[in-house]
Length: 250
View 1 (cartoon, rainbow, N blue to C red):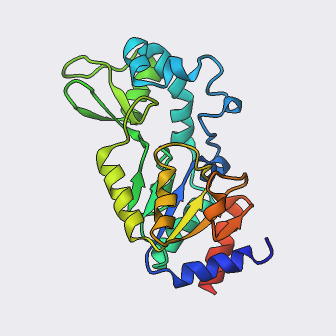
View 2 (cartoon, one colour):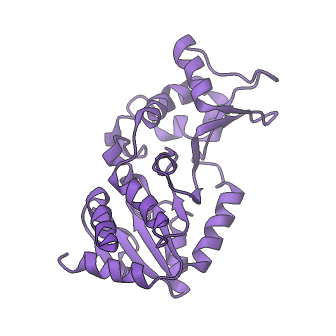
């Protein structure tokens, strides 16, 4: 660990096209848990199969909204932490191009980052599955919280669905294409706070590695792709990334 941060800095300095790939671990310091974790409290009333699939959303939207409400409330109240701000700073300094994220919380954009590719959708918008009318999540969640009623489309009265990817849904086509294009260009991928266990997003760093890209993995726990990493950083990203930025700024 002593030499890991300087080694990461050298890879970032040498990279011509660096891409970040972030997961739930980057947002835990902002108070947002990994919603797939049983310890997060978000699975207390329902199992994942009961609420977190599109089929379940259609069949029992009340259960779906009961489950997703605390996640959305936390995302609305949360603020970016030093890890989010550090990635935005790396972009501003010209060391980082795209940021691919598995997160739906919007904190990376709130930190000032640009070119953020949201692989699993966004908690900030919602869409009517029938007529495709778009709404802000703040609008529909306010209705749900205040009136305790399921949000329906004002045009066709169908139940509105937040623009997050559920377990039985494909990733957004445009986001997946943009992520693959970024990875094809990359000569460095910086993995931040991801276990690299969720398919198909976890294929992206490995694809970059096969193309010859260097890999930095910043994760507290081992990942399935540790074997391809050139640098492993086993400390919280909210501590590691500001150190990297400080060295690059000096």
